[in-house]
Length: 395
Image (cartoon, rainbow, N blue to C red; front, side, top):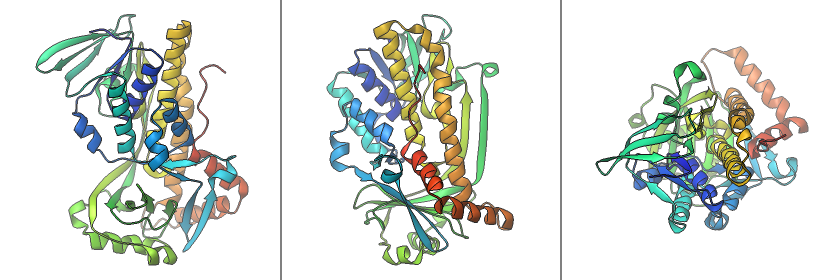
C-alpha cells in the first residue's frame, strides 16, 4: 500500500485531519487499532471553541452540528453562594463556544469519510513506524491476520497518550513536562434537563463542581473527589446530594435529578512532550499533550494541531514548501503552552487542594474576586475560553 499521509488513530483528530486532507486532494490512509463501534462509544468533552467550529465547517461536517449543537454566548463562575456570568460574545467581539458532543463530532467525521471514499482500516495490530528520519518512511501493521506495509511521505500520530507514535521518538530526543493533580472528577450523565442554559463552574469549600450538558435533555455533572475514590461507592442519590451542596442555593433548588446513564472518575493531569515532531512524524493531540478538563481545551487543542498540520501539508503538496516542515512543532507549542496555562489556572483557582491550606484558599478567593470584578480580568477568561487564535506557520 502507498499513500501521501499515513494517519495513526481514528479518533476525532485523525478523522478531522483525514477529512481536510481528502478535500484538499491529498491522499491519506487512517490506521486504528480499535473497532469503529468502540471509537464511537467513548464519551468525551463537548465544548467546542470558535476555531474548531470554523474548522469543522471548513471540513464540510457542520450540518448536524449547526442543527443540533447549542451555541453559548456565556459561561458562569460560582463562588460564595453567588454566580458571575462571563459574557463571552461581548468580551471577544462576538465569538462563542458550541456545546456538541465529541461522540457526535466523531460520527459526523466517520460518515463524511465514508461518503468521500477515504480509506480507514480498523482493528489493526502491531502498528510500527519505520525510517522516520528518511524521505521514505513506512508503517508495518497486522490486519485480518496478515502483515502489511504502508509506504508514505509523512506520518501523523493521532493515537493518543498511550499510542505508538510518541513512543517511536528516541527517548534522548524527547523532553516531557508533567503535573499530576491530587484529585479527580466524578462525572454523571443523565437524561435530565440542564440546570442552566450555560455551563457553571463552581468553587466550594467541599471541592469543585461543574454543571454541563450534552443537549437540552441530557446533562453532564461533575464533582471533585480524591483519587482513591471508587465509582461503586457513589450511588446516584449520594452524587446528587453532594452536587447540590456545592452549588449556589438558587441553582441547587432548580436541579432536576434522575437515574445515571453513566458514572466514571477521571484523574486530572497536565502533560506536554517536546518536540512534537521527529523527522517525518508529527504528533497530534493527546499524543503530545494532555490538559486537565477544567478549561475545556483537550479536544480543541487537538483541533489546533490538526489545523497547523493540514495547512502545512497543503503548503507542501500544493506549493512545494517543504522548508516549512520543521516549523510544525514550534508553531503548535506556542498555542499548546498557552492552553496548558489557562487549564492549569482554572484548575488552580477552582479546586480544593488540601484540608488545611488556608493561605491557598485565601489566594483563590482573592483571585476570583479580582478577575470577576475587573473587565480586563473577565476579558482574559473570555478570550481563553472561546479559544486563542491559531498560530500561523509563517509570521
